[in-house]
Length: 553
Ligand code: ADP
Ligand code: MG
Image 1 (tube, rainbow, N blue to C red):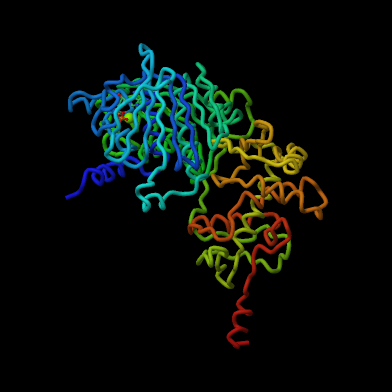
Image 2 (cartoon, rainbow, N blue to C red):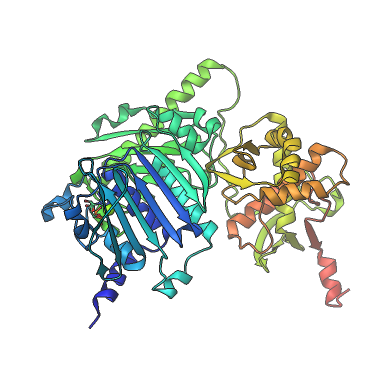
């Protein structure tokens, strides 16, 4: 027989697996309670403490003990209602699940109460409620996540990784609720605040960054007329895309979720407007009659099943395609004859490629043969063959060279950089801040946009294209910059350092097509043989070298 505590922990395990799940449940409750201001406070990435404070309806004292019991929900009376939920929570498992794995304290006050109520719950113990001072609304603290389940606690990532998850989720979530202000605090510092606004575009700028938001197109909703429901959103203009899908934010009935099908429809809408392997970004709000959606397929409600899925996906695809076509026509009319709308599909995906057609360093050493990636060695070198000899490519040096040339090229053409979904906050010391101030303009030309955000805090708003979602080490970058006096040209130095910090490092596992792309792009560099710091990017063993090793020559 399992005891009540264990049963509770097992059920909770489905819902609460890391600090982010606690944040999700509590923030959704705050929204359901009609809050206009939601503050999320974390300590130790949320492992030590998650606290969510709202100014919503509050919970009446009599209802409070029930609220932390499993399947106690005020939002659902009969089972059939599961088909028609308008609120974010509906199963009455959120608070109970959190209390099963963390020490919970709720302080709450309804608008008609003179004084608030406090309740503590942990494992299967729910203490009796007691009067407590507090403003109207609710404050829930969850302390010591998985203190009672060391195995699950081990599975958590570092505090900063957990914080990043929470920050990414909360800022995406905020896109659907511009009239609500959101604040995220961590270890006593403000991470970010998004003031309430009536203007959806303003919230867009807070989340995607100003430059990216300006380039986004409001979705043409004409195509959605056939939909029983509605579709709205903002999408990136052609050419403004990214190497991953992390900036495709999707809401179905104001619920933030991942859906491979919908993401596929999104990309399909761009068809010829985007390159293979590149992904448009933006936010879509799909509202469907509640009985067309089953949010109940996933314990954390992060995926949905759609009824009439094909029609819905089709509408999404068409709306995006129509929007882009409309945009292309206006752009063309604006600037007749101007280039910018030719998007050649990239066809090198996973195939043999031409190597060294533009090699400059040692033309006699670089045969124009076909290249094939064979393996990755020690997660550091790429082993490839050009049909004759063997090539050993240093993945970091190669990537650095490619990034460097991309940065230089972009700087010369003033191409837009890649906005971050969550601006990255970095604390700098005085020397680093000074180095940053000196390099700021050059960095911006190279695609790294950093702005001051408080006294010693800066935020990275965008990174150079091709940089993807790698965490950018601004501090390391600035230290490098102060330490490396040899190079002559400041621009060159800043960009070389930028390239170095924006790429694959040794020790990183690469997928076969990533390696192919890397080697292929290296081959198209102006100077493919050396990284911007002068180290070799590759070594070639010619057939004669190999023959000599076997004493055949
Ligand atoms: P659910 O959200 O699925 O109903 P929860 O366990 O998350 O279940 O919450 C249980 C109940 O507690 C909710 O139905 C709601 O009545 C009440 N509640 C929880 N959090 C809040 C809050 N922040 N403000 C007001 N009421 C809340
Ligand atoms: Mg809930």
